[in-house]
Length: 246
Image (cartoon, rainbow, N blue to C red; front, side, top):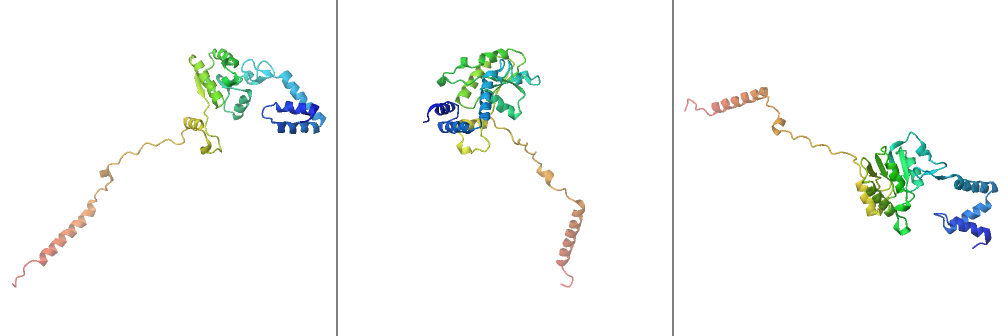
């Protein structure tokens, strides 16, 4: 334990997610030894985030105005909406460059143990967006854990009343570089469900007629054989014919 401001800083840093007591202590002493200009810049960045950054009125992503840059981009496909839990999930999907539609951030996942139900999440805002005829597909991209699966199941039931909207779920399975023996049953099950065809089976070759496989007889080859047989017969007859001296 330290006294005064040092311990207060360690305590505050330790409240950050993923920061334990030892990490908080290292960070605190790093700030004590840092250049005052660097510390001032860090304090200014933290204050600017609190003063300027808000959540998009449309999708719930982080923004510095009423709407985020993705919602303001006219090049995005307004027919597809990808539903995620947190703004950090938007960043992860954007890095793949595989999705060019819009997003909807729920602000978390359904977790009764933590007191988070559908009413605490942005489902009502999503329903308002889906009232538009533009949306034809909703991609559910919640985390592949118990809370994420519960949220996805609730969302699928909620969207079952909408006509003309396809609901899909991101496939989840074995991570690249992972060992099969360490995968749990749910992960392996998802991997089988999301499997893709690598090579399609070719149709069996038609059965050939065995008679068609036999080579046709060559008449020219049969003639010498017949001549040879006849000559052999004449020789045998001559050899066993009775002589006139007996």
